[in-house]
Length: 355
Image 1: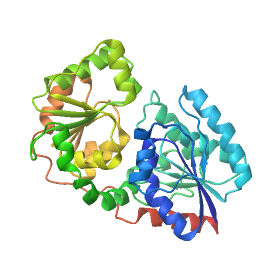
Image 2: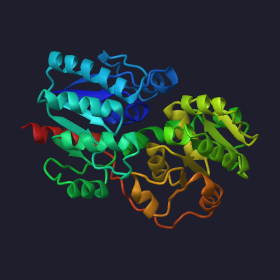
Image 3: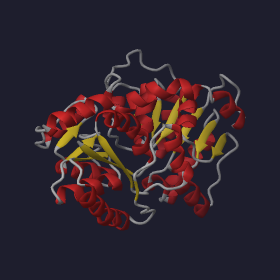
Image 4: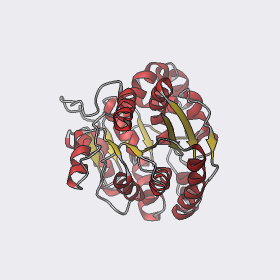
C-alpha cells in the first residue's frame, strides 16, 4: 500500500516517529509536512531528535488565521493527493493540519485513518475540539488511544472502523526516555538548578490563556508566587503576549527558549510537578508518574483527572492546585494507554481495513 502521512505541528512530529517507522518497514510512505510549525525549535529539531526521515513534501504554509492556514493546506494537499494517489491518508490529533488532511482526502474519496480518534473535551470554544470532532466523522479508520475515547465515539454513533490501539506516545517514551536522561545534568546547570532540587516544569501556549490580559496576568502572578523554581520554555505566543501586556516573570521562573523533545523529556523526568495547558504534556506527565496541574477548565485526557494525577484549575485557584500537586501522589496508577507496539498495531489495522 501507499500511505500518505500528514504532519504539521509539534505534537504530530512527536507521534509520527513510531508510526512512520512501522509503515516504512511494510509499505510505501509519503510524509507530508504542512509547515504549520516551521521554526527550527518548533519543527526541524524534532525530526533530528526523533530520527524522522526528511518529508517527501514540504507545503510551507506557515502562520496565519485558522481559516487562512486551513484553506492553504486544503488547496495544496488536494494537489499532492491527486498526484500521489495514496491508498490511505493518515492524520494525527487535532490541529489545522489534521482537519485539512482529512477533509481534502474525504472530498476526493481517499480513505482517512485518524490516530488519537475519540478524544473530547466537550468545549467547542477550543479550535482543537472542532478539528477532532470533524476529523472523526470524516474518517474511515478510527484509532482511539483509550477505552474512554472508544466510548466517546460510540456516543456519536461511530462504531464501524474503530480499533483500540493504545497511545503512540507509549512507543515514543519507551524509545527515548533513557536517551533523554543523559541530558539532565546540562539542562539543570543551564537553569541554575541542582541535581535533585524540586522544581515545576511549565508550559503555557493556548490562545485562551495568552491572549486575555487579565487571565495571563493571573497566570504570571501565580507562577511568581510559587515556593519552588519554575522552568518555563517560552512558546512564541506566550513571549509575544506577555511583552505586549507588560507582564514580567519573577526570579523563581527560569524562562528558556522552546525546547526539543529530548530536552523536554529530560526535564519532565526530573521535575516534581508539571503545570501546563498542553494536551500532550498532561499525558506524558501521567506516563512518567509526575503530578500535573492543567490551567484549563476542561481536558480531553479525563482519565488523568479522574485518577487524581491531574488537576484542572482556573488561574485564581492555581496556587492551591499547585500545593495539592506537591503532596504525595495517588497510590494507584492505572494503565490507561496500552502497551508498547502501538505503531505496529496501527499498521495492522490499516492492512486489515485495506483488504
